[in-house]
Length: 434
Ligand SMILES: Cc1cc2nc3c(=O)[nH]c(=O)nc-3n(C[C@H](O)[C@H](O)[C@H](O)COP(=O)(O)OP(=O)(O)OC[C@H]3O[C@@H](n4cnc5c(N)ncnc54)[C@H](O)[C@@H]3O)c2cc1C
Image (tube, rainbow, N blue to C red; front, top):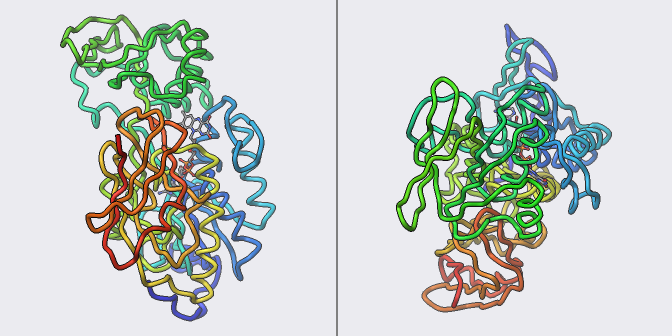
């Protein structure tokens, strides 16, 4: 990747209105004020010459944790165990205290140059001309139409994001009996929100042969919520118009179908990165994650444009997204100082049962990935996987890991395993050995 052109004063200067457009010229613009974007802004603001501006489309900064009113946030980055909203408030305070500027109600809609973006705000249009751009737009759960669930167009069908927005932020009502699709961490978060709203989770469904979240959550969860997890099942029909009355559930092994009465259906997991801006920039997407392709320094292929958080690994926990934010700061500072990326690079590929690996480009001359970890997604439960790396048809490394790979959550591999990679020997395949 090439180094930035020397800094030339942008005209008009900061905050000047040109026609009906306000032009801002920060050193760095961060798109998205979730944990990853706010942490990047916090790390960069004291270190760069110029402003660090964060643009957030919602009316308040904080990202998903703002909506997710239960404990479980801040463990690895803040060494605390906090609720989502408390964690979000703390991230905002820290970013602002570091000197970052946060503009809310500002939706970035397009690009007007390599590192120039356009945003819409209630006060009018804004053009941001920055020397570096960080994409931190997160990921969302795929809604019902994208999941191709047939049946009636019933009211009472939500994703976890919609549900938590309705219950925690708008204090709205849901029904009395819910079916939750999914049995991963976020599914239990949905069950918690439903309980708070006075709605009982009568069933959770998963296509996998075992619940996908840690037993630490799923065993007490089943007792606390008095719910059952139906493994190897899927919802085949939504019944009820205008209000949901029931769903049809299919047993994937026997093909038998049954009706479960419910007035609320929550579709959890099944994530898709919010990658529209990366696509609009023509940045190559990784077909595994559907997020932008990045290297271990979190550079995209567009010079001076970086990406962080769940946009890259849909989805991991908020602390990991936040640690990405801190990790990218060094790369952005290098870019602003005119230091270019090491030329040598190797592509990483995830072999079955892994669906994806992030980051997918390894540059041996760069610092290790964030937390010295490669992140992968597994479609199969493997208690103690023996990881194997192949390059040029040869096994170059093997390593037994003492934690499981499981569907529904990110699996981490120490990046030290990449020491065996030779930059000239072509792509590296990461798989498991029996
Ligand atoms: C229901 C649920 C429960 C969870 N529970 C936990 C938990 O207990 N513990 C934990 O650690 N993690 C939990 N997580 C995961 C955690 O919330 C995410 O890992 C974290 O929020 C990811 O941070 P991020 O910065 O990558 O993205 P996000 O938090 O999604 O932030 C992205 C931000 O970008 C903004 N944005 C997107 N596009 C634009 C645009 N075009 N213009 C301007 N702004 C834009 C969005 O509005 C959003 O605010 C949970 C997630 C969910 C959904």
